[in-house]
Image (spheres, one colour):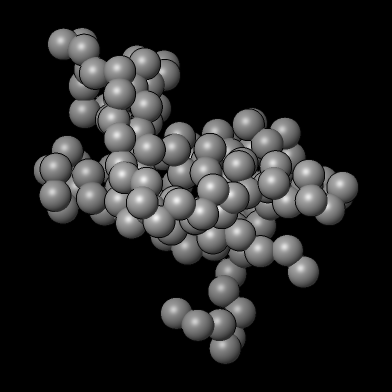
Length: 141
């Protein structure tokens, strides 16, 4: 079995909401991301507690680059959502490299999986469908 951990995913949006005050609810992030055509050159590395797979760097720290006077809240939010997808792609690419097998579909659950923008962006950069699944009874919560 192959497994990879992304330490900060939906928590990046929670951080933008609770600590930075850039949005009022996580649900709002989808509309904010769609309000701009791209990140405007803003990139977020949400290594708030280090980086998980495939980097395994406990000393990595979060970074935001590309901010200009034209940067809006929407750019930050979109960059955060895209960072989740790129972290997942790094794990999938590593698994593919290690196993020689490429997944035909990515199944997702959790709060971030409710974000249509994120799921579509994830599908686009992976080149495979993203399917939302319901948590099975007995899964840890």
